[in-house]
Length: 191
Image (cartoon, rainbow, N blue to C red):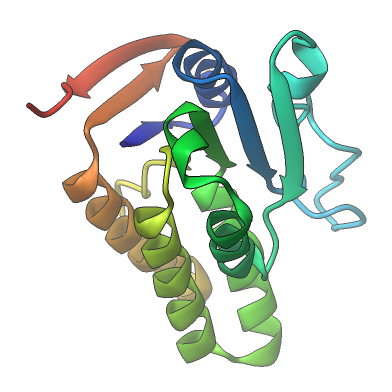
């Protein structure tokens, strides 16, 4: 089952995804992205934000495993599938927090190396791995920008994020949009 949690920056997506995971399973794997902007960036990025602390730090009664959402994220998903007991898949929840954060870091790396094709391929590989994951999958993602961007790399990011979000939305059982910390189901569970 695939669930998509979307909304703007600071809308409460991470907290909602954590509560959702805890209500649906007995154990969860949290693939968490580093803070944005990256540490040491000129925009004054400090340490990890409270949004990136994740549910594992808030609730101890639920079994959380925390892994980095890095360039090997898709490979990690495949390894988890291969190494896991298939009979426990229905009780396992995977939370990717967040697809948009993961992609922001990949686009930043691509802008430095000039590697648009590799980033597009890595995004497709991650989306395919999310769709193939056995168990409940919750993907947190920002909505793509609603307007035109002057920067070439920002346009590239918006295009890839919009494509990935649409592909995941097409396969999602339920889509939640968060506004002011309030979740609204914009697509209910499919029968």
